[in-house]
Picture (cartoon, rainbow, N blue to C red):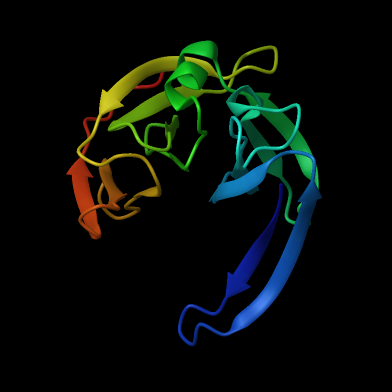
Length: 168
């Protein structure tokens, strides 16, 4: 279980760069830019597809600088990990309210999280139902609260307007 960041030119789709993140954290499933840093979700799975000695409870959020050096890491709280089981996190993005929104692999829900004031475990603020089952998500930067997600079974991209609750 290792990952790399692959960078492509959006206009030509020509490969521009690669950044190997190596083994040891899990499988890179999503990465987003916020506040001058890269925030990445590393998945770990139970059983087949997992690394020996690790399972969904080793799912990790990692912050990187521009040289992809690790500058922080956080674990997910128990209720979110229970919802991930036996898989892991498949999508994540920072909302316009400053909170982290994460999907699992197959449930029709988002997990609202924030960084802890102290310690290494994210704080779960609530679960938001959505119409798609896990996978990639992204907030629309031009329309506050508009979340794009993927419906794998229907092979569709779905827009969902979320009510943004102020950060606690």
